[in-house]
Image 1 (tube, rainbow, N blue to C red):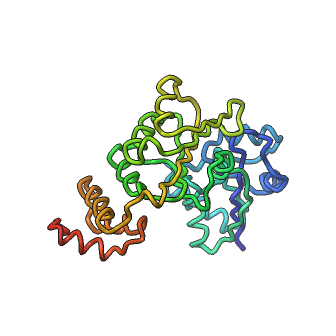
Image 2: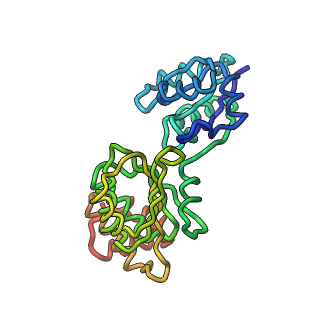
Image 3: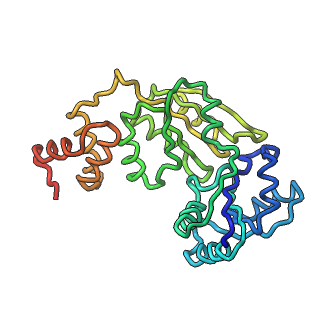
Length: 281
């Protein structure tokens, strides 16, 4: 009989943000798969938990994943954790969970803190829905393609920005594509000593960080576009398609992406693209 895979949330900064169930499962599993064993070791040491750690990160091989799944099939209960927050969201733990499901292994979730919902609660923005975008592509062209697709998004958008990325460049891209008057909330170092929540327009944020060098990890909450200010007719949607095609996107993929964001049918966009004389092959 196989063991069980437990997806175990961990604190996003403050080590006191754990639950009784998280502590119990970290004690009870046979071993813990960690993105960075050094980070997880600090949490385990804080609670005096003695448990074997197995490294599993974005550069781990398929054979590494297979060995872990093989141990579960042999009866081991394992925990999957990430450096901070809920595993398997913009995180290599997704690979193990997918393999577990494919092998009919029970998967259970032990929920905990997340930067997404924490930042949304702090933002003070009024919204009924949001879209989680995670980390934007580092490549400028790919990043702008993604932002072009989001230009007419009416939901609040949540982005992650890590210290090694360039917050200033991202803000400039926001200004270019969303406009400088779009409201943005920037949450820095959530639950840590230097936690900070900053509320700006995009233009104000650019000005602020020209004077204050960005430090730490950021969650960016960007206000969605106001429906009355958006042109979501076929012509404006087609312009979005054309911009993506100019950036190198395949016409069919560009139509599909814009259709998903605007609600206009992919077939309509593709037909309009053909009428414009664009090469759709």
